[in-house]
Image (cartoon, rainbow, N blue to C red; front, side, top):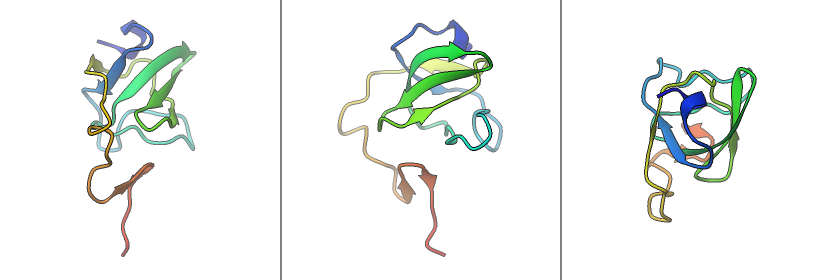
Length: 91
């Protein structure tokens, strides 16, 4: 389903994306496929959502999403090698 079709206040994740992730406004935090987020509302082309860490994110309204379970504290741990804003490298 498209993000604009999803109900408010449910947990979602992207199902289809290009190599750079879901389309977001310039200077916005990227939205990776593994990242769960809660839909707030649609504001024009983009949305007002929060991820499982409380960060504000803005995936495009037409992003393909699926409804997922409410994350628990165990599921909110960051994947190995990532900080709360995405992948990082010490190189």
